[in-house]
Image (cartoon, rainbow, N blue to C red; front, side, top):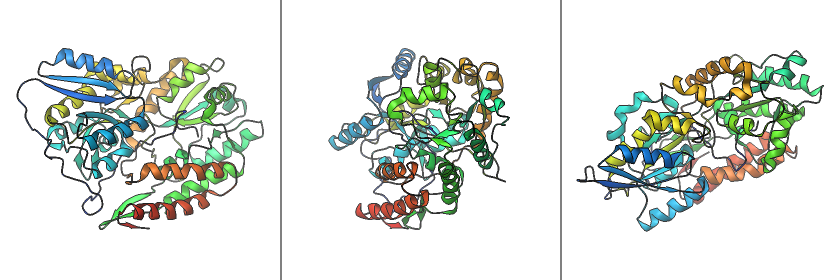
Length: 444
């Protein structure tokens, strides 16, 4: 499906409300580091990795007299987690950190984040629900969302027209289209062996809950009805050889394959289009957007997203000026100039804004070069998808370790060495045991 970036994927999805008491070593957001109101100008250290943040910080500092942000650019998401871990242990964590939703529960469990609900919840209506949920755990808000996750299909119009295929409305249609394309040497999608996000996002769409709360324990369910429904779609695609198996380790080869018409669709968000537009040479104007396929007989529902989409600006508990930090985070996500800077693939990182009122940003978030005459209809596909985003997906406290384990098994699935259901059975057992080894109460 190629739903991710060339480097290892880190999911973005909305974090469901979690009953943390007795499940995680979470602490209240109003720890000793909190200082509801500091007098005089304050400086807020801010760590992030996204392009455009430095320009946004410069604009903030120019427009604020009593609050200043000191920006430090971190290499990437992995580096952020390592550096933040060290900083929290040393007692000198920055006030503001960029992160993605998969990490919020884990950082709350470690007592690293401040509950800033009282400072930002009044602005909830400015954001779309899926994005707002990404900064919350158990109804408490620990930061402000910076981006959102419209998801849809991009497909080769010339290839589809040549073989009389309509854009797939359902996953059944998708498989049928894949079988027709196969007759002509074209793959319907690509499954990179290092990237199990395909399984995750389809399970999410199908109503699965790999992690949930049951009383005072975590409940692990990698074999629930939703996951098995998603697994069937994936297995059908693999068994029928409808997918390419190109690794993002050779990013140029993946892009050439799309450009040459070797693979005809991708399920993506807005930011992936930038990479396509920058690397293609032959297929400009031959792409169009259609809604994310549904499961047969079900209403439209899209997963809550992927790496780079759905970032949040979190406030740490060690920050001595939490109110000002929350205000700064809110400004960076709502100021028109700041949002425009970050949503542009030229000045920022090209992700879609988290704002509910996003119409003025749609045009700049998709590529007219890539879409050609299909550019105008694509705008509606993007905006429509935002009303169907999943908001009840929970990340467990060992998500990163779990995802790494799943990567190894996914490679075997893509290479037909085992079935999707074999991988799910392994992940069920592995995840339960891993949580127990961490001293976390779990049912599975």
